Length: 287
Image 1: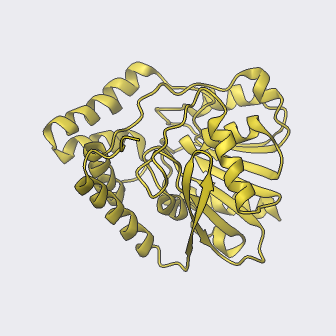
Image 2: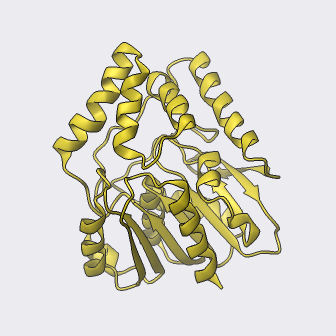
């Protein structure tokens, strides 16, 4: 299989930043490699095994350490399993799955089964939301409830806005290597400036073959068949997946929708205050 990294040097630079982020979290963790039919999946495990399990899923062009930072604090109440999604700039296999079929759902259930997780809670952001919804479409078994923050796969934003505000600056950065274009791109998506995101994505854009496939949306019939409890956190100023539009559709298609929250001041990527709010919501809701 041809590598998704454009060079070994580029791969090393990206994984070095991965390791830096993980080290900077100052947490006790262990790695576990999970063999799936789609390839090796790296999982970072944090917290006490006597506590209930929660599995967290990062967004597109991300990695498990970023998810651990986003959901920081959950380890006080759960044993946290942070997965490196396949074919992303991280330590899992480079097998690219299709968003059009149930591969992501099968894969995540294989990970859950291998880890012997029972009645597990799932939490995911952006593309991680798509992965979780695919898992629910595939089967509800072993999943207690899910928390989705600004998830892909429910609605899409205005494609012209995304083109001019996100994809063109990205392409200009790749061509010119001027970091100002990365900053412009992130300013449209991030509620607060993130120095690590600038550094990490600057490497990813240059050295990793990203997936530019159109993001599909879940069919109404599939959504209505989901029985697992869903909590949806949407962002009002989300360019990619507009919050109010998302909530409107979610209310129509999910009979198992338990709670909906609209983050009034948030862009696609939440700030640290909203992240803490989400962690508290998951903890309190669980109890």
